[in-house]
Amino acid sequence: MSPTILAIESSCDDTSAAVIKDGKILSNIVATQAVHEKYGGVVPELASRAHEQNIIPVISQALLTANITKSELNAVAFTRGPGLLGSLLVGCSFAKSFALGLHLPIIEVNHMQAHILAHFIDAPQPSFPFLCLTVSGGHTQIVLVNNHLDFEILGQTTDDAVGEAFDKSAKLLGLPYPGGPLLDKIAQSGNPDKYTFPIVNMPGYDYSFSGIKTSILNFIKNNTQVNPDFISENLPDICASIQKALIQTLMKKLVLATKETGIKEIAIAGGVSANSGLRQTMQEFALKYKWNTYVPAFQYCTDNAAMIAITAHYKYLAGEFANQYASPDPRLKLSL
Ligand code: KG4
Ligand code: ZN
Image 1: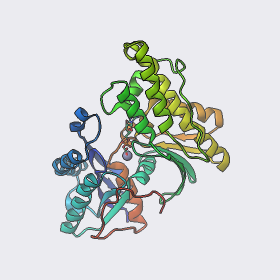
Image 2: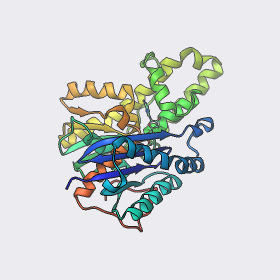
Image 3: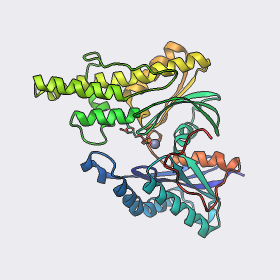
């Protein structure tokens, strides 16, 4: 049976709901929380309060847009983790009570699996096995994907995530939160070869972004001491050079993983997969290394419930349901 599922995403600072029917997304509503901007980062308590305010309107809109009534639903899905506990609790509690009232089964979804399975929302879809570079605000992982529900982490960051490195670099440059997308935009008119930053080489397929972050901090400090207007006079070149260093770091291990596994089906996922430099580099590497590359549509890169819905679809078909004791897990791991 092909199910109709309502999916809820509330792991961080986006409240989102989607409806999927027969594996096709009918709606995907995202309410982004502007409340964090003035603090320069996500404030967990404010995030959960905003989820509380947003969740009913967002779900109502998702059902309305999909033209689906509650009685047509076969299951309710929610993000179990990883994420902020208070934020996850809102989605989880809502999903459980909504499903209980309607006598529907519930499906819990791993947010990082969902980022990867966003590739199965639309064509073209990668064939198994494929490698996915998952790059978000909290994670940086190279994942071997054997099938829709079988994932193996080959390598990951040992400290900061690359999204965090983008955001913190942007903050050091005085750009407003969330800085990653803005840094990307400014970098487009800059010279990426103007400044160089170290590419840290970790063992195996692992990453580290704390060293490059410190070197960016020192670079800005040293240069602004000499010239207080250094940032404003060179902003596009600084952004482009930082972006280049971060992308080079990502690609070095991805290339190694493709060489050692022999896999040429290569995908990227997560918020940072929206980065224009990374998307362009994927195209260049596809030609150079004869990869088939898969880059998600922009609306499925950053957090959204459509990716939760497609994951729930496959879990429904596999009979993987949760029970009313289901609870959020802020540190939920990708591999089972
Ligand atoms: O996947 P996501 O929406 O949330 C998490 O699960 O973390 O990823 C958010 C991250 C943030 O660090 C944001 O700055 C980064 O993705 N991001 C970007 C771009 N768009 C979003 N980083 C660089 N360039 C972009 N265009
Ligand atoms: Zn995410």
